[in-house]
Image (cartoon, rainbow, N blue to C red):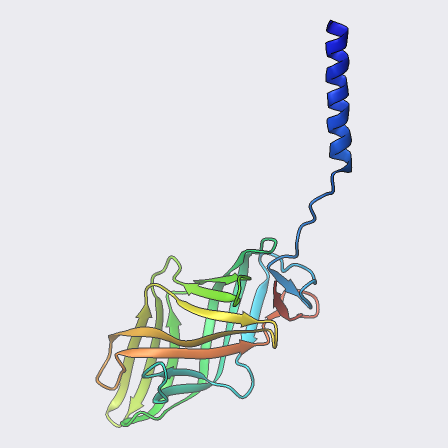
Length: 223
């Protein structure tokens, strides 16, 4: 009886091992972020991603979601560090370290020029998803709300318009042009004069996004 049980156990163990040996391995998909192509190398954690505005476009801060009154900038750029990049499907995360604006003008009555636009409370957190629509969520980090200060020149001196968004803004990515964009994302005025809009709506599209840490600085793809 013991011999029979032993043989039966051995047979089951052998069958299990045989099944394990012939079962197909589960191949990992590409990473959420790759370089060069959708099937290219995974972006390494710690890599730095940079981008400027898409040529011929502007970064804008307007008085409404569909308005054209406010401030527009001919140059803008950002730099972010990849903090996670799992296999697709899923979401990768980045730390937005810098965002700059330049060559800015305004068509607001009483404003003679734009002295500067700066962002505050960096770093911010950027979550890049490969879900339908390729959504992006830019949210506050540990330093506090997303902040933007617009300094306007007037005939009576400079005016500071300080805006914040405590919950975050949304955007999208596209592998056509390797871009990341934001459209009419609201920032609420927390201090400033009557020349400052109560809500400033931010729009900009950046591309191509490149991985400056990888050899040849290849473009970024989202899978």
